[in-house]
Image 1: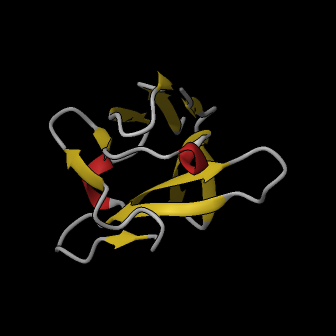
Image 2: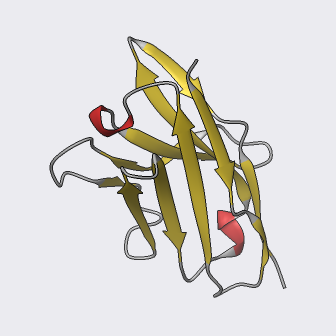
Length: 116
């Protein structure tokens, strides 16, 4: 059974940092790309970053380039999203996703709130 569990969200002041984690199970983790998405209140879910199974072609949304870094630890079946220089517009629920046999699997999300 494919499962994704996000953690690491919270309340942070503008300019601060958070590191999100997405722990996966139920599939051969090191063979699949993993993505981070976010959804702010009243907005559509948008892609934030994606890391491939192999290679170095990492995707970042323009809005987070230079501030967010995605990485993975295959030994721990975990993908991370390091978020620096956070802005109020980064406030959202953050989800990780894997496409497995043509179907998208999502975690339940973790709330990130950037506010003073």
